[in-house]
Length: 421
Ligand code: GP9
Ligand code: MN
Image 1 (cartoon, protein in one colour):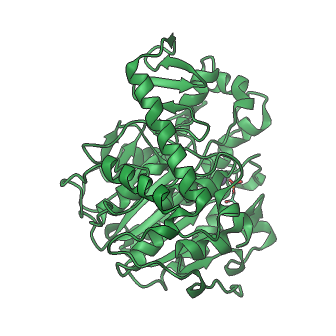
Image 2: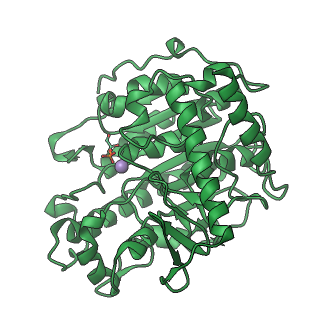
């Protein structure tokens, strides 16, 4: 096994994208606030329903100079959905082809973001309005090194505030604030939202926009819950600004996975006013990524990337080198960023080509094209990354490797007592 990890380390060292000096360390010592935008897909940004914006707040951030807005950013999740998104961004490792690594590999050794940052003076915390055992979070968060986990037991969970999987986003953020205020700074935090979750039910009184009219209920409802989530985010930002945290924190907002599956291509054709087949459905796997770095000018960013790339991007912004770490992503802001985005099933997308199950589409036209030398190489890269990542995760290979400057953590040092709200 130690030979296997050597192969992996050689590969990730050799392919590491150098940090970009224009961004490296620009957020040194700042807090990190991750906002996990449940089921938010990128098509919703600037989408108008009956002439009305669905997510006016997110739209305003996407066009603001305070945020970098990445419009070619893809989710890379599989069956683990939310848990896969978390796994990707805390480790820069891929989720598994079947099942959820969160559930089956919760006891593995990891070199995860909370553990690394814990060794740079950060306190880490997750906020989520569902109970802690869901997705095995209470176990794997210990292996990742999260100091605190504020689960549903810390929130009021009044029946009128609960919908679908848990606490509605507005009371969630409101009740999170006093707990956030107790964290020593700098902190590394993640807020996992819930209200925009399949099949998108919403109390009538919370609806501030009409449903869509495709006749496909979950698609139609999606617009209302996306609007509700957008309003909840705006309320939280009002607090972040008023408290000064906005000027003192890197804020990273990302869509975790699709909300509308390919079973709804027909309704999505109506939503988008164009035929949605295999090619267009892949384009719909874009999720919004918005990054605020105090003092750094934002704007639209068009590089191709995926959730695997978030961890090195974030660490480099904080001025933490990633050379020694086994990470399969590459810093989105690096000049050497790799624009091959593998999906969990082995398909992939690049700025030019969408590769689906042995068929290749020209992104500019959506037409089928012949496989060429570049496509073959990119395919090999995508396959190699997925294969090596799977070896690491299935074989628990990080047991056999300790990056320079990192001390392995002991999961037993972490404990998540119930709140008594
Ligand atoms: C559950 C929530 C939703 O706690 O994070 O998970 P999902 O169904 O999206 O994977
Ligand atoms: Mn989710």
